[in-house]
Image (tube, rainbow, N blue to C red; front, side, top):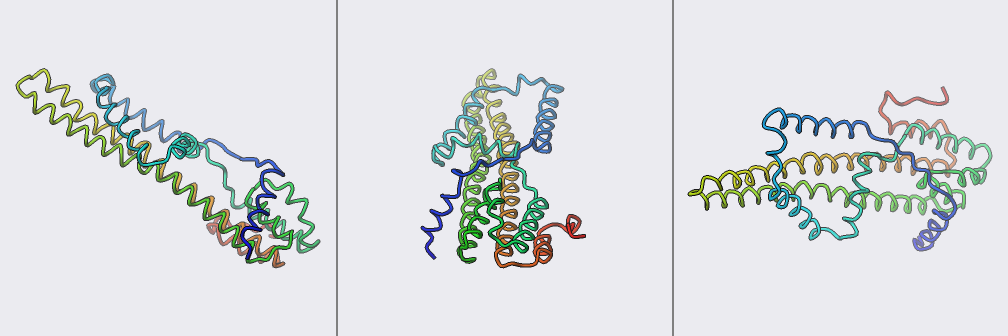
Length: 279
């Protein structure tokens, strides 16, 4: 298997020949969840002593500044520059519609079985799913099944690995923010103990001790952990779609009956979503 040859082949049929249409929409669950969390937290502060007492510049410097600093140590700058983009994926993910993908693969299978696989050449040029386009192009070009599967699986695995790196950023944000909150607490306690003879200095020191812990917990549990979790879910959805595409391409190339192909691909869906287009 000449991987270099096929990598050049994939690059040749890539973005130069078509435009990828990304279908995105706001994830209302994510947006509403964040909004609800902040409204409840800020509202509870306002009802109590007001929001002002919860704002402390030294605590912000320790937690926010410290977290940014250690993130710069722990990750490459090129990776950190994309953190806004990764955050955006949590709010506006690319849609993954498995039933639609399965229907498309079954249609391609029906056409290939009826008119031959070369009849899919026009469909390849019009296909907007990058991963599916690559697989179909290689199948139409007559590449060996093992070569097609190998390269598509490499693509899927490397994509998932990149996503894992992005997820790691937000996991570390939560961990580092919590650690900085603890460090800030210790700084505040030391300052408080050193000023026990001056009652006026105890309050500010205690505020640093408590608010740094609060800030660290909020960053870790409102931003870090939830974003890492939803990005992991997005990655799983995308990987599942790519697995469906790989199985579909293999079946199309081998000339499987479209009904058999559909039954195979529908097994990837929950039972209540398995609706055959042949019924």
